[in-house]
Image 1: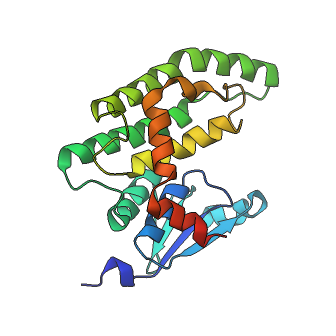
Image 2: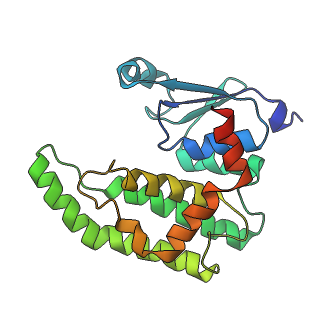
Amino acid sequence: MTSSSSRQHELLYFNGAGRAETIRISLHAAGINFTDTRFTGKDWPTIKPTTPLGGVPVLKVDGDSHCQSVSLARYAGKLGGFYPTDPLQALIVDEAIETLNELMAVAPKHSDPEELLKLRKDFQAGTMTKYVDFLEGLIQKNGGVGFASTPSIADLTLWGTVKMIRTGDWTGIDATFFESFAGIVATVESIAKDDKVVAYYASRE
């Protein structure tokens, strides 16, 4: 059987972090010399029909296209050492990353800027706080840092989400929203210093 490290990997995503950064970091940690294909919004209409379900990220393995961001993150995480071998810890990591993806999906959208701000303010006070309280609880049950005994794809995905909020990428959400959640702040600080994460960004310089 061909090992994953000897297979040809190509990751397709927009030229940004988004739902692909966890996959990129994990593949790099696995020592896989993957092709990181990035494109801009103007190229999307051409690329979209070539994807399995009309969305990205897409990971091509030996030419076969695979989709669904959490599935791809889990695959890459297993290769790169960012996914627990313990079944219960794996369940909690899956639970966390699915919660983060769902949080992004249910965030209100509106074409009117003023209405969007109102909807996002209510969202932050209600649904978003509920979801983030849940994530903070998982981290506290794990000792206050991370979702498992070792750094995971959930930690990486949380870090990406927090960075988006802190930089104002979510219109109408307070940039300092996460600062009152001690476990989330500690997890983000920890994963940012992880040797494999640092090595990935060093390779991009």
